[in-house]
Length: 112
Image 1: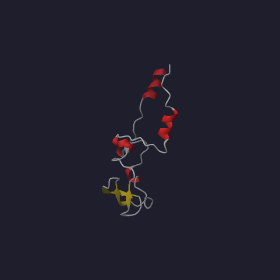
Image 2: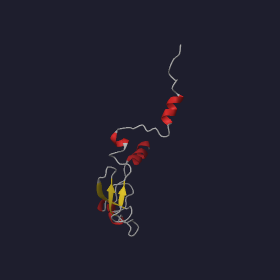
Image 3: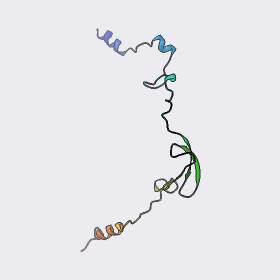
Image 4: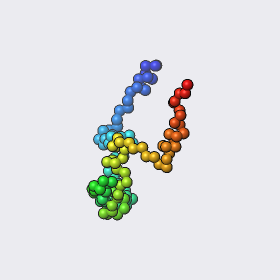
């Protein structure tokens, strides 16, 4: 009895004749190709805009931002941001670094 029950659980079901004639696309729960068309009139307008980098270079790309021909001026881009350039700058905003150094200047020095 154990062999018959276990064999039923391990055996994969055979595909139906309809599934063999009309295979589904790869993916779990994926709809057939003829049912995957985009819905009309729900997508934003996709048009060409101008991008101006921090160093003044410009290029055109397509976006949903603004209207056709609008300009996007970047404040931070891969040419100037430390995350991409690897050059870090310490900025003392309002004397915070100086305040820290003054407060903790005596730590680490030994007195005899």
